[in-house]
Length: 498
Image 1 (cartoon, rainbow, N blue to C red):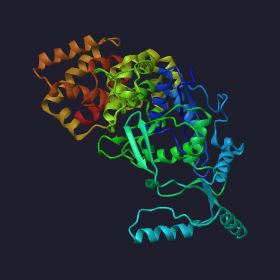
Image 2 (cartoon, rainbow, N blue to C red):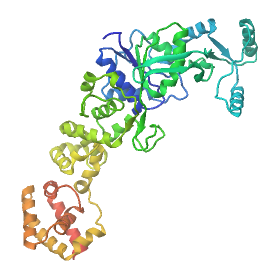
Image 3 (cartoon, rainbow, N blue to C red):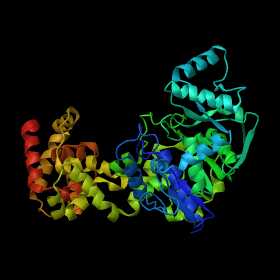
Image 4 (cartoon, rainbow, N blue to C red):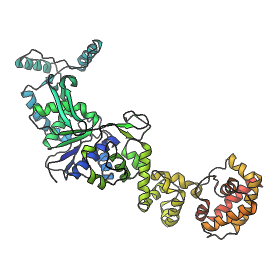
């Protein structure tokens, strides 16, 4: 590894691993591994009110499931720890630099109450002004400002610490993805909070301190962080530190609506954990996420993580919005399922067992039969493993209802003829008849009765499986228990044909 390339993924344990965050983690991992650099995970847990139980664990577990590893993290400490912001805060790491900025006069304590701030915002709105913070110590000397501090303290007020924005400055950087960007300091809305009243640092301050002390060289993150970059550059400049190279990846939008992918968009599953539960493959998730806002050379779309690592090129990150296409994800996952069905088979078994269609013991005893059922039911057509449950449920484990349409097929003149011929032929066949024998038998009935198509096949399907459509019937019949099928046929006959 080399310290020339040190990148980080810094999740907050306020929720589960979102597709957008997974992309940030994946691209940083690819960047580090491609250049033989260092991949760091830092937990940004300073917003304790929003942190959820097991949030950090969920993030790390899902990253591992995606096949990502890391070089430094809370569970793999290195020389730049600790790797949780709450622990860093307890050690006074941020306070040291807060105090430095206060001493330099580049930051100040603000005692304005939430009511005062609300009144100022309301007045600005009424005057049709852009929201901005109004500096309360304008024209005061340092001594006079310190006296104000003491006065507010005596009233029992708790201050926040605000950074004094140099409003005439323009902050510019050459973005890895977006090219040259310039944002004026006035656009950040005035002096901003770097330390909250409870002593916790704010995101835009803490992230700078952490990235500097952890020697992060490149920051790859989502486009929504562009507006944060000037604030962070202010802190780098104020503390005399070098600025890392920034790269802001394109927004992920809902392919169906064209709108930014929002966690409140209930039409799209957006958390990695949800896809795991449905039976998506980690290789497919990596494959799909890796194509969100990044394009490899050529027309191929199926890539392993190792292939992505070898070909990764940060200069091919797209400026255009990345479309989240659910159908494409399903197609990619289907490709990975078909790629190695033997590896997928235990997952399919687990889904069928979890659905209560068969016990674990019976699944183990009848493993060869269950594999054949899965193949015949159409495993090649599924988008994720949980779909196998509905494909095998009928007729291998349960029988569906006989509909009015089915009754019409059975009770028609052709249907009665076909049923009688099929009952006689099927009963006479050996229990171990193969698919070719069943097909030959049905073709024989077709020739004898001169009935074909749906009028031939549907009465047989309905009588044996209570289905009109489904997998290849001769192959199904091989796997169905003959005494059970004979009983089904007898029940159908007694109810609809006698």
